[in-house]
Length: 125
Image 1: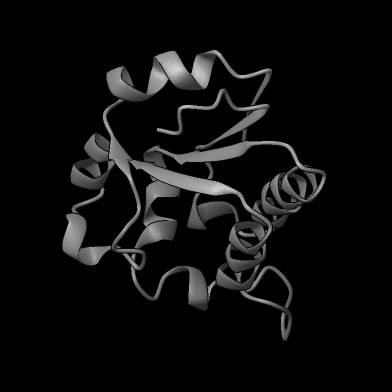
Image 2: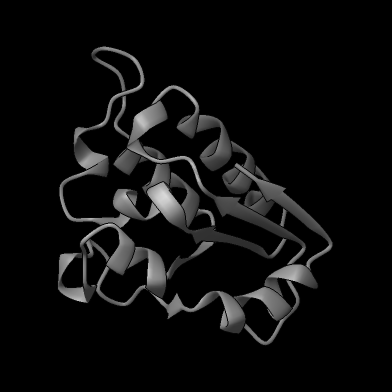
C-alpha cells in the first residue's frame, strides 16, 4: 500500500460477467489520476478474474471496440495504482502465476481495509 492516503479508491467487484459496466470504472479512475489525485483500484470477488492473463484482453464492451485491457492500461498510464485481493484469487481458482501483472500487490481484506477506508472517497463498482 502506498504511504500516501488515497484521494479515491475504487473497489472493483464487477468482473467479466458485466462487460458493459466495466469501462466507466476505469474512465473515472484514469480521469481522477490525470487530475493529480492519488487513485487506487482494489480488485476483489469476480473482478479478480480481470487480472488473469488473457481475460481482460478478450473482453470487448463494444463489438470491434477497445478491450478492458486497453482501459486498464490507460488507467495505469495515468497513475492509477491497482491491487488485488489475495483470497479472491483462491475463490476464483487462481494463484499469483495466473496474473497478467506479476508486480501487482496482493492484499488480504484485513490488510487492505484500513488504508482503503481512509481514502477521501470510496466507490464500489
